[in-house]
Length: 458
Image 1 (cartoon, rainbow, N blue to C red):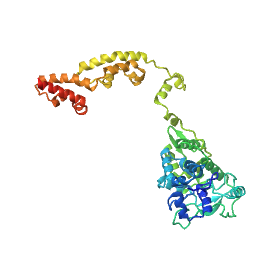
Image 2: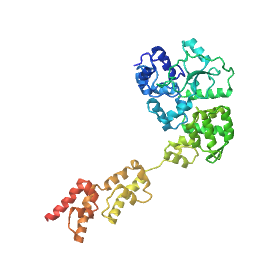
Image 3: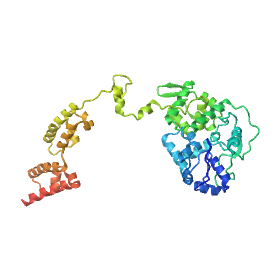
Image 4: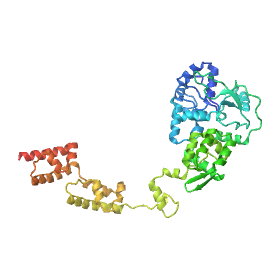
């Protein structure tokens, strides 16, 4: 158990927490990784760590953060998961908790991480004066963020690489605290307003407690493109001017991979699923696009179709058929089932007699009775719990296996006598259409054997 494990600060990466823990314990990196993650080759990645199940089991019982809170509040999970579907989010979350290498985790680890860790000089000075130590902010470690959204100053590029930091065997394997890093002096004073807008959007996504669905995010981006004149809606298709979008992303320093993906799309036409694919491929480019066009992602609303997807079909049907448009279920007419109940209860015995008269070797079941009834009386059988008379009539009219076997054996004997065939169990079961019940049900088998035995005794 880790009795001296530090409590994370707001917006602190898990890597920074372990750096502060190692500054106290002063353990070798192999021993530290073995104690925290159960593997010498698994460390606290600054972007998306792995095998957090082993780490959370080592924490004290009254530790104020759970495993889910650590993942959402102290990693870049929100930025990787906001553009993914629910199934892909679960895969990514499971790969972070365990040591399994999922494709989504491996791809997003290299997409989201910058070349080196970044640090805000104002944040470092303020944190050292208040709490005596500085820490790595997760907002600063997302690719493309060059401005601190809190102090609105440019970030400093440190000499601490973000990738291959904590892997055993690497030359750069180390846990470096933010307090021990020297800040370069040649930092521009005036930040770019476009970079500030991008950093603020990244901070909003990371601080979101409940992520919107993938459909809501993509719909918000498409609506933002429509608002800025970069897309036109024609029926169900979207036509986008990729040249304008390409120039916007190029001015904001969009990664080359995202630009190449945009150029591969032919005819300048894109569907909603194509943009979903782009977000899954490169979330950095989509975030840059949303920041460049001032599109609100964190407060995206669910599409109308998604809201109505979970609504029962009967509610939608009654709402569409109601006299007042948009009135809802409360205006739907109430159905009086008592007349239907009386009609069905009266016609069930008549239908049974008709079935037996047409084919005596037909077993009376609920399905055969419903088929024999008229078209008017078929509808109420969906609501049998509201038809007590019909339910009682059905229970009295339906044949059990024993009742049907007794009726069919008497008919089968006459048919075998007329044809002059021997009365054996197999011939009798075949004549009564009871071959399958004869093999499956012991009651039917016993009745057929008794009928054959009585005949031979006589």
